[in-house]
Length: 159
Image (cartoon, rainbow, N blue to C red):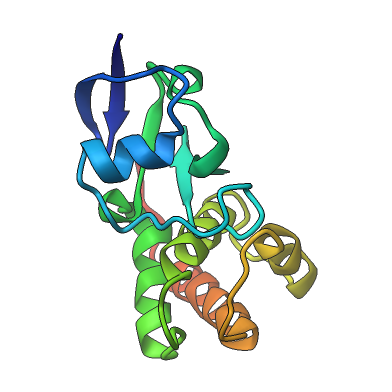
């Protein structure tokens, strides 16, 4: 069955089972491999992508649930929050092994897109579904604070 998806601002039509998890459509059919498989049960966050701007776990989300909606993967993460988070990750040398980092970045960018100045409790709540086997949690939290400060220092954009 053909399913239309908009991934990273590009509309694609895939002839796949509508019950296939979004993760496998992204990785195996669209060849966007930045989104990782971790647990397959939405417990680790490695598969995090944005659905209409909100972080979701793609390993348990069937294609049928996202048809016609806007999906963003790590490869398509743009905008001020996405750039600030990616820059902070580099500046603070967050990753160790790096496997979970695309999911961590997607969750952090989702947080900052909706909460410009999160406190530690906000960060812990937003990031609680993302596991880092290397335990870089303090660097992740510091990078989110750094990204928030970067965003706050940017001049307001008129529209």
